[in-house]
Image (cartoon, rainbow, N blue to C red):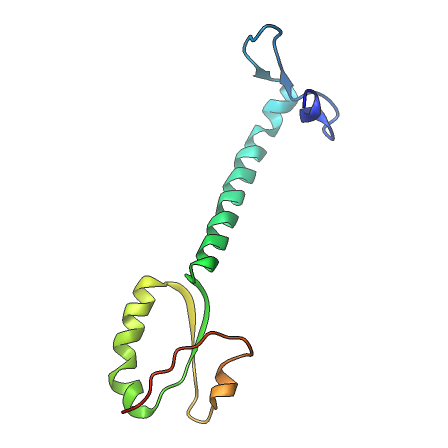
Length: 115
């Protein structure tokens, strides 16, 4: 939409040449250019954060296991998990926590049965 670029800024930000000539920034456009770069960088970070969330690369995992499984199986699994998901925060359980204490409602969880 022609002229929309200056709405809210008090004047034009670009000068468009008639007949397809080059477009250039006005003094006001030049003053805003560093802010535009910052906004685009932050927008990119926001998109990456949402992509990580959808891909389960961020979040929290509560973990509870029996003593045997916790000693011999979980450390190996956690090391592999942490390598693939460095943004996920692990929440260790204390010996007296129940599964309900560890996991909030609607949480995803992984159960490792003891043998």
